[in-house]
Image 1 (cartoon, rainbow, N blue to C red):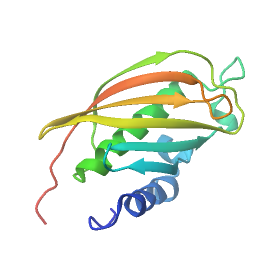
Image 2 (tube, rainbow, N blue to C red):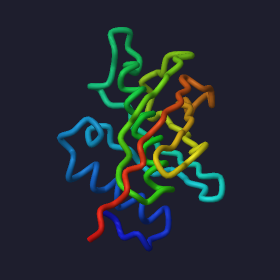
Image 3 (cartoon, rainbow, N blue to C red):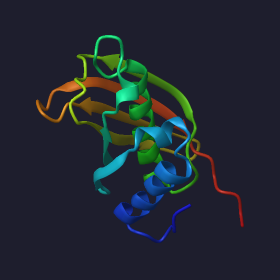
Image 4 (cartoon, rainbow, N blue to C red):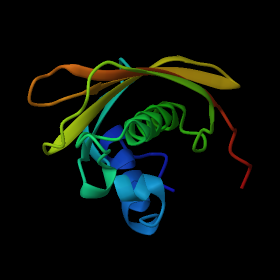
Length: 151
């Protein structure tokens, strides 16, 4: 777990390194999320995901379940980043698919924490196709805030 005193970019870079390397066998680790930007004042986070061969659906575009997983991970990481408690479990999530994501390079997930209380947080995100800038999907999620245990 990253040092709580690190800045947002450094803290998140350490966490993503842990997910992508130490948890490489998990779904989150296999998606290989990369930090793209964050805005502490607006509580926004943008992660970029390379589009990998195993993520394709039968139509040759990004599988909707993988899109959903990318969005869930990004919103969860945004809540985690701005609460600095523990990795927040998903309570609920609604996804709206607007257009297919072509398997060209990357997809960006733009997330914003819209509320963060003592027990739960809500986040909104968009899956953006970098080449066109078009939104492929939107989602809203609610996450449990689990307080850290005293050490």
